Length: 87
Image (cartoon, rainbow, N blue to C red; front, side):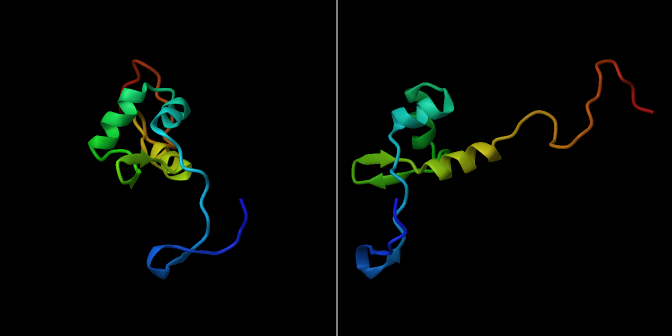
């Protein structure tokens, strides 16, 4: 990609973005079924760009969303062995 500045709709100026991904490409990136990607998109959980009847995804936005999806123990917390008791 080049760093040229282009004119968008309504005269807005922006930098070109990376190529947008399809649902199939996002599914491959996340190692999930395409149906999962489409369901999460319809529910408003995955960041996406609507282009008329088409839905596309920005790779960086999807990766940012993924990094925000944490579960389990908190980051940086000490590992606690099974059976440990609190004092």
